[in-house]
Image 1 (tube, helix red, strand yellow):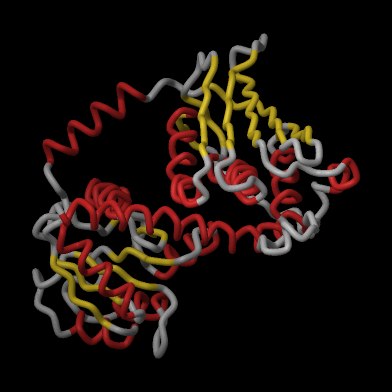
Image 2: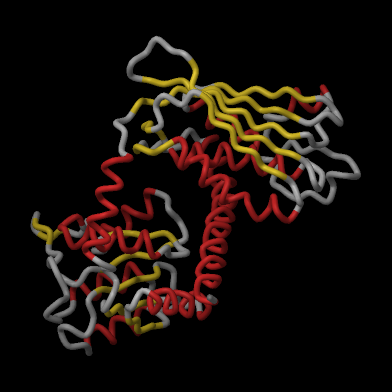
Length: 366
């Protein structure tokens, strides 16, 4: 009934907010690229899941403009690869976002991937195409599309917002990954962007993941019955977090700043709270200071209560900062319950980042 709808909408809001955060990070990324400071993080992922996630991200925008997005996959011999999924996501978000933006209502967009023949047994070559039947571009504009701050100007495009950085970032990222990007377009005839990239072949994780899912299901919902002490100064964020935790069967006590959470922790008895969720940017006392103060306090659980940082930035330096302050792990805002659950499992199995005197001080079990 309604609950399913609420969860569905919350998921969509969540995906969209993450996409928005990505746009803000684009501007910051451009300055990092220019300073030669882009950091690539490699992990195993499924090309098919990757395409599916992009489909989900753009579903609402496509629906609103009554466009169609067709996803085509051909000859995928190696579904699992090792690469920088975040930056690849950024590349194709930029290309798809442009396709949606510069294609009229009711237009058609295609997202195509094929694995190409290659002699390597370590790398697989993928050819991605993002094409549309939108307004296309003139030959002159085509030549400058990958320069920073370039945007198509016409009466049709003046209503279209954007930083004009998207394509420059896209080209820089593709090339930093050792790939190539090309565009074929004619005014009034639509555009087609081609990205060629080599990705390391990873072991197929489909079976392993299914087994993991089963184990998690047998373990039941790890959040069920947990008691959280949370620091969050934004009232709406606090309300959403409380509601999401409640749906999972967890309790949550909200504090508005670092000082409040320190006081609440110091006055609590062991067993009142299982874990702390700490917003990093708060008035009066920020999350890093509050964490240091909690770890220094004379409370029985001062050193052992797990503390998870919640931040809007997922830059590696923020994660390092959180761990250095004495937190165990880091989740990006808006907080996804699946991610939180995964993080808690990792902490409980001794995978938390906070260490004292070379030992992990996180207690197993609640």
